[in-house]
Length: 165
Image (cartoon, rainbow, N blue to C red; front, side, top):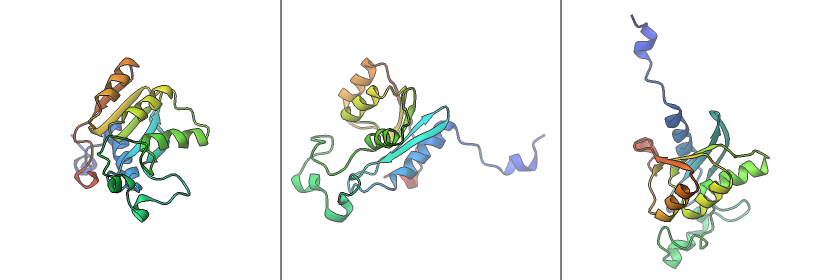
């Protein structure tokens, strides 16, 4: 027989849903005008670091000065160096490094599939697994992750409708 509490309580989130929702919340700090992305580094079900995409500290944000990629007509997924901002995954790595937190063996939960540059960085950090909610058209990124034997998985429906950015 179930207790009144269990009948009233919603189903508990899985760990993957929990961390993916945190990544979505982190993405709300993004200063990118094109795409808000959040990432969370996790090890042993503990959050190690978070990151979102945006300009480096002390640099004007795209929200304030406009998007140089839009101004230059650069398509999404190309010429990543032509951007004021850092990617969420890059900021996770930087935050962990600044605070002396090793990422080897950790998992990354990210709202979006990492690009090739971020995938190479995550490989070198010895990230064990990458989970993402939205795909990104970068087959080379997947190829590198496969070759490095880094597990990755798209978790469909992981973001609530309000967090679809």
